[in-house]
Image 1 (cartoon, rainbow, N blue to C red):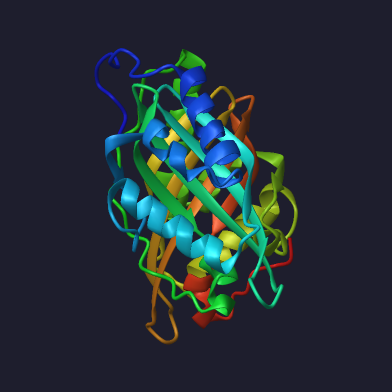
Image 2 (cartoon, helix red, strand yellow):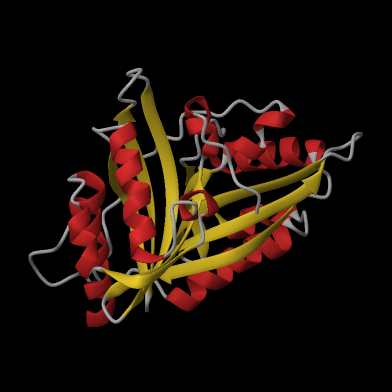
Length: 286
């Protein structure tokens, strides 16, 4: 995934990319102005979200289903990382079920590729644990991967290399000692489940040490990765088997990392707790 030659020219303007995604959430999703979909989505729009019907008609179908269930549903972009023609957003969704008023609080991460100021492609990571109580069955979140875009500043390329190498050594080879030189000692963990293992780098290592005992063959593979200044955002897929039962673990996450002085300093994520419910892992309160 690390290039052996100079990267290609940039494939899109980051400011224009961000503006399209912001408008999507402001006007189409939160404003429920779905008549604007033809303006914001390419005619050949590809949606990789599992279970979604294809094209713009599939988008309308998904929106109709969700808004019928949750008429006041809104999505708030909490984080956005934009690199050339792609944007990854971490979104908090909130609404109330029609008829019962039961509250929904859910998280997604969404990756968009923009072409000619229109959305051409979409990938996602859902935390389906919040949707299961409303009768929604989680699908397999397997989606096609993409290569890193190496058209970035030298500092941004260094940040990409750092994260790719950390994932290779720590999340695939389970070499936790590698983290010592590549995480800050005062590393900040915003995943409350992981933070239960303790603060800083020591807590991070203890958390993954426990995971690797529970699932000795567990590996995390990066499917998509973006960089913007000191932030790196990525989609990962995790595979392994529980040591005692042999049960298979298949998990998709989206991770946001802040880099400081060449080390990973802070972490946020979208974690599909529904995929690990069988192992007794439950989502912590936000």
